[in-house]
Image (cartoon, rainbow, N blue to C red; front, top):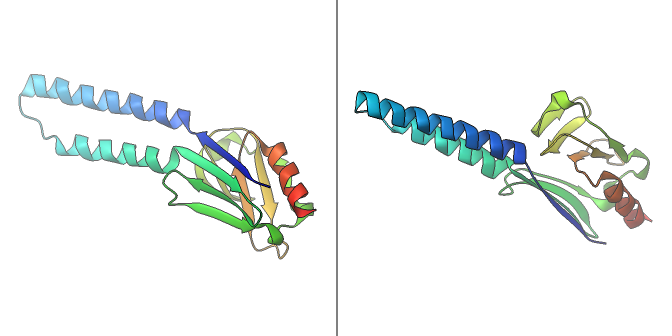
Length: 151
């Protein structure tokens, strides 16, 4: 059984584009009025926003015969769990609070990986030490596929 879903953080993209547009508008207005403005701060801020978009802008969830994984952007941050470690009774579909936000979040129920508000799937290992908690619009489908894989 193979499953792959990629989600994009469009909210993050839009906010970053707006902030970068405002930032560069301020730079050019200052340049026009003052004549000489240091560009280094503007370049550094642009690099930070672009880096955040590259790291947290895309969430990919993969499942194969052996494991389920979720990774952000350039695969710097990866959450994995072996299929054989999953406790079938612990699989639940939740709707995390909007207060958790988007991105990599530490919550009372575990570390949440998500790119947008909505449903999430939470899985615990048989020994109770590991938690796989990922936001996805296909939470029910993913739950069915995991249960099918465990059968």
